Image (cartoon, rainbow, N blue to C red; front, side, top):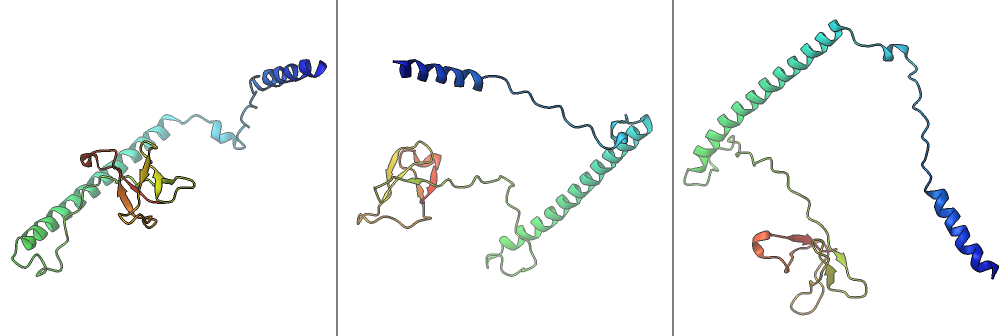
Length: 159
């Protein structure tokens, strides 16, 4: 009888103790007293000038890079329009691809105890990834998720 009362009471006590707020200690004071010193007007102006100079340098560098790519893009465009497919001018640089960062292809999880079946990383549905002979496909192969239309291009890697 006492055990029936002790267990809920101890659980309630544990729960109440775990819900109390945690008191964080204040951050330590910096060792260097100069770190607490406020910046003077002159130092603020110098910092602002340095930031503006850095922005101007970056803008000039970006402009120079754009000019290089536009010059190289014109040569590559001319070489590409030739009959031999652009192999006549080896110095021509190919046009740069857009900087659209591709997302990594997600990896599916294998269904335990069922070789040839995986969980889709997009909707967690079970997908049969066996070849027409019924054999599991090799690890690392990229497959399209059949639960989505082809226009959405939901691809995943086999585990």
